[in-house]
Image (cartoon, rainbow, N blue to C red):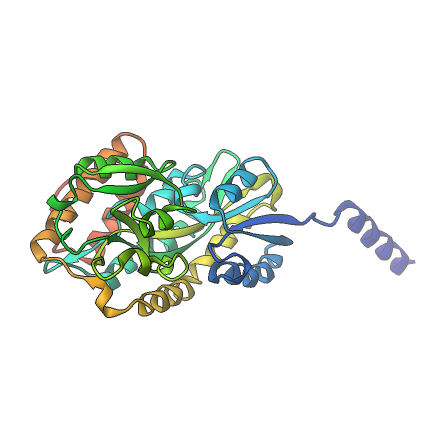
Length: 342
């Protein structure tokens, strides 16, 4: 009799817990289903089952369409660059703020320490105590992973100082006000573009300068735009990230935090993709800048970042956290004795 009662109870529990519907994921990868980001997402599908989700991936080579599909509810999760995800969470989206991760030592950007800043920020945002910061309205951040430093690609090696940016045409994403403001600040002209056409505009000469990570070099054939006269300036204007945003009503309670923890542990996988992409660029394509100009760029980026936070483009809380982390890895920096961004 006890066995029959227990079996009846289990049957009731099963009927009260209907199978969770699949959650559709819109994944932006410039190479579609054959790209590194989509491949990382396929591994994630298996992990997400342990968090109570049953994900169905769809690849998009146009980030705008992926974002619009998420916005209109045609998918429940968006995997895209922070240029698009910042609209759903300004704190996480500000990780990519101009120069926010950069650590400068002896007139050069220390890239290992700069990526350490990104890693520590992602780890902090992955914790349960950051849940309130990672939730805005009905949207939650479900993961962040590095996409690499954004470098300036210039049509001519003569464009080798801050002053020489004046009067040049620079591609600017319409949906990222930070780019437009920064371009205007250096006296250049912003040219409307998006992630689907900025590479082509550089290659056909419509613009003189773009900012892009190494991961874009081969897929967008940016070597065509560089030609023999151009170069990639070895000074990051920002460190870019990919971010996952979920419609929280479509996922089990606690899913987003578990997912953020999963992606924070995938940081080395993201770094491997970045390393491979940077190794794929010929040494001759790079151009170093004088230490004095590194300092000028750093100050310019800091002033722009602070200005953009005041105008609402970046979240001040995120900039405050990142400054504390920068100063944690490089206490000797003169900015650590100032109250800016605090």
